[in-house]
Image 1 (tube, rainbow, N blue to C red):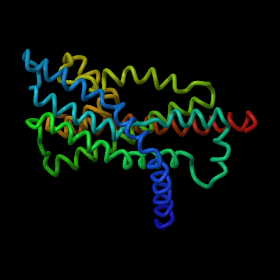
Image 2: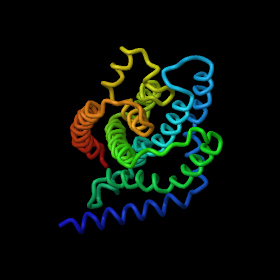
Image 3: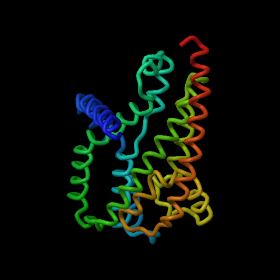
Length: 263
């Protein structure tokens, strides 16, 4: 019963991986474009050396390295792909095939994770050469938990952005919604500052949103910062369920609108 879906999944991943490795130089530039945490690392570690902060300089260095790695694993761009499919009419051809178009986008994202992994590891190695005192090895349970939470974070991030992409059935620039969302993501996800530096009330409000669980939550687990694990998993599940139902609703409504326009 599982043989056919498994075979299709392997085929999709293999095809998209082969496509991704054709553009190795582009992948390197994509990895480097997400290196802002490495810059912030220097800023925060220097600040921690000058004044007393919630984390030490070593903890800041480890945190932003973890942020860099988690960011590489949770990056999503499906809204731009889906928007182009709608505007260029390519979705019509995808709908003729016996598979939901979402799985092609999902497979492309997973394959890209694998393809960019060597470049990410090179930059991590370079980091430890510059900051040998920050070298640490998480325990096996800690590492497995981090990978598990990161996988959930990626799935949630993908689902949220794919839901926003559904608005491309009605508006010309669905990506504008993602750009607005990104402003909140930038400040509330822990991307530019760990939540320990937030005022207590602001931190509690942020933890009710999906933003910290995409970056801060798995990064904090990776370096051993205290987190409210079960509360975090419940919040991630709640947001994922909400956007799943929104996604399916917009998909059904959008397809009727799309076919009504003559596609």
